[in-house]
Length: 413
Image (cartoon, rainbow, N blue to C red; front, side):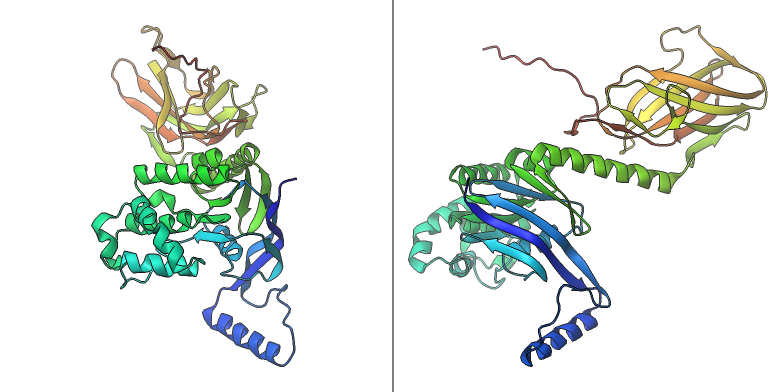
């Protein structure tokens, strides 16, 4: 069994929504402690909330742990507890090893001091002697790549220079445990690649890295296991692939719910000449029941219920499918492959059905669009940019593309 470096058990951290009340609670706790009364930190008081609530995990030697979740989910608070900046209000944290942390851009830097002076100050704070800093100084400056600015006050540094110097200090002290919070994204591509290479080197040397990031591709590449946080609570602690699938699925469901709540039926881009009106639309199952979720790889059955107010000839239909960024993934007309195939609509109500055969759209949230036009005159009778949204689910985590294809790779030299 690998040596346990970090053990977190049922940890919680609370804060107050009111600054005045927070100060009052702080003074009250100090006074109670002074007279021998130990405050009960496990219960919420008025206006308090759990920023981190009942989180547990273990990180062993040589492992990299990812912590992901939406903004405000408690990721940075958890990292600050691991670094000893915050003490947990309940539960326990056991750290076995020296800790280096890069939790905020330029954290711990004095703006009026030079980069050189801040290297010595930060190195000392992180437990290095002056002799050790002298030995590693050139390597720190070289890795940070800030050139002549090393003797300039850091208040003149760009955010990228801050990150490069802070990361270089943290990485060069060779900590047994390195904590990183969403700062690598600030640097340029060259620095990001160099930093990721350094993290991989630490991992190979059996060091521990705890990595907070919104970049799921970096999490996938670097991490052995992943903790998912949402509103302070731990939703999952699993191996990386399973955790990312769970995270994507949950985020997708939230986006679908938000889309429905925000848009409702046919409120976006609904234009009608008055001759035809749309009453309903979306996707249906094989029995004709309206649904909002299908499985990746299945056919997509679209439908539109319309009301026609007069007989119309020479009709063509247009169906489109848009992703969440309103980018058109599929658009096709009813006469694309038969220029003479026009339809007629009689006064009354009808349902138009379109079967999209196995489009292999990646898991995500999509919206169908719809239009009816006259093939002879080009006039538009009705157009809707988005019908009710639907979700495609599957055991695939999108990696930037919309369509999944089976690829055959080869190298020819």
